[in-house]
Length: 438
Length: 147
Image: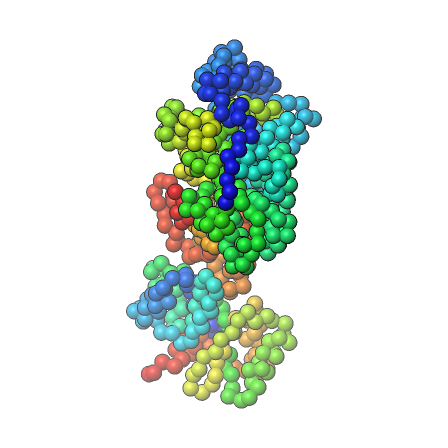
């Protein structure tokens, strides 16, 4: 595939670290002044630490500021952290659109433009221009995947084809008929699509040259596999709705880590044990301060994603710092088909069933035909066992519905006998991830 | 002596050797199996049995970590005549009772059918009032054992 290196905003993407540090400092001072007093959460947090806006004079002062966690977002759900008049909120997006653990983010009109611009930088990083047609098969909705790429395509001046997720046959037909030159979806769906297209024998008729994939962890092997089936280049895009959605970072053709747009998002890597700053290349928790966002800016937001960072100019010419592929999570959260799933959600849902099932369960995350699957093994309470398959199937269905409601994804339920799931002292092993992602 | 009998039902997890394990436990503890039905679903099996000592059967399985339960069922004696099972079924349906499942077992003189319904007592009543006979507990549990 022909490849031409393009950089959308060389002034920022190739700036010297000193220049950026100055810009980041200015933006941080402005941010702190903006939120202090307006967002009671930050006022209280800063007072607790004895910090005043005047104490923040440059980016190096960031360590004086408090952290923000996902729990803080939930505690202040939905608009408690909004720093602009509510009428200036132009868009609301959320993580995975599930009940229970929903976290949302509010965006002003400028924030949406910022998002579009960041995605446009990523699309450019993937070699795309205003002549491209981008087939978006991420879901559209509260989930940021679909809207994010769509906005990015608009900013780039490219054509967006808003397919949303599902219906592989139709995806293949439209991809061919509309002459899509790029597509965006989760990596597991990308591989599934690629294999389906190979099977249908349509690969040679496609004009696809790039794939933009994120929202779940994936390996280099998987990238190479998709690339070899479709004869394209694939890129790893990263983001989270709280911070922006896709477009916070992405890798370039050299695949030497994901470039963070650090003029807008200041990254820190913290030692998970004591939150001390990690050295370059050292594994830790990625933490972001949003320097440019208006509606819901976040200070030192703990992503719980484990990665390492490296500075220095990339072969592509960008000076943007790069984060390594994610090594996992600081907590037990699993990302399944782009949806965040916590074992505690399963527990809560099972407990709500009122004794029909024991709160003993085991989650098995697998990847079958390149799609993530979640199997939940549930112990049925002895009193609710039945000799009638109809009754057990009804119970199984009910558990399935309760879990789908709680998690936002379909679950394979397997009923098991009471007391057969291994008990452990202390922290129970609730999740087995068989996807073998590195 | 009630006219319904106890069936021993066992939930079988879908893993190799599980059925073997259950039968072993019963055999080693002197519990004889008179009749048996095994229903399979995609992820578990349901083993239903008429045994010589249902209570003991349940207990020995439980001590071996196997979930078993006792269910009231009716064991119909089906005369060796064409249409007799159909006639019995007809009586049950007419009586407004739903049959959940059924399986058959053989003994010397008759054919026999184990019937699980939502109202076992009524099934006995319906069958007996229309001239059918059902197994009593002590007979059923010891049917077909060579003296």
